Figure (cartoon, rainbow, N blue to C red):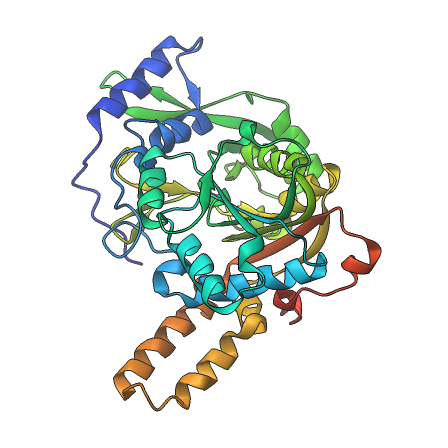
Length: 397
């Protein structure tokens, strides 16, 4: 994508003032980048996800897989169906969608299962965990014809869920700590205010020992890399807490995480010296989180190794890791492409349009390269032996 022109800055002035207040009240007149990112994205009244509901989609700043059509949700529904079968068709199967956006994916899943799988659909309890009140209101309006519940983490009892927790492009939006290597030491990057009331970055000692523990967890020794001084990247500590929340609530079933990211050795490659942080505004990407504050999205790639290893510590087992393109092809996207070619009801223009949509979901330079991680808890040895259909194609490389 082309870089947007950064000359016009539409900052949310009220939000900027709130951030400046947080900085002035802090002991050292500085806040971690994670604190800054949390305020920018999730402040209840003025954050990016707390204000304009049309940030996502064709009229917003970015598209997710469900925006390309119903196929993504319908293929996921087929995977949930198989999970239900593997768990021996429990009478109550809970789907917990974490960060449901505008509710489009939930609508696709529920609508498809209601039409095609009458035995499975009545067993489903659909639960949404959503931080944004604005998005929650949009979800409730969109899903008002379905039996959907909304909940906070503290309202879900430990070891109470049989089914599947899942998310699509959620973890990339968790606030991250930024760091830099200086003089062979890991130094954290903080946000402070200069004399002109602009936000600037400074480095200081790390705010928490959890950052060093993180690199032990993923088995990365940054300081052993040659010429590492000046290297910058991110650490997603919130993702580790999130994995523990999910594991605590899950009695038996799966955790399915779809997002863009890498395994740790590729994430913290010394050649990637500027990290993975990126911002989105009106479908353009930039790397300046201090521009259009509260008006643009801020994300960082996901370290899937951290999710796997933290999951192991919390009682989850790794079922498999693959790419979205392979995952969807294994679930039947290829069959859908073949059916389009033989469909006599569609015009040539409609066939080409549908094919373009399906190909976008598996494009190896885009959505198709997203990571898909599946973890489980509480499965019997016999249940573990059954390969999930979405993981039946071997990863490339």
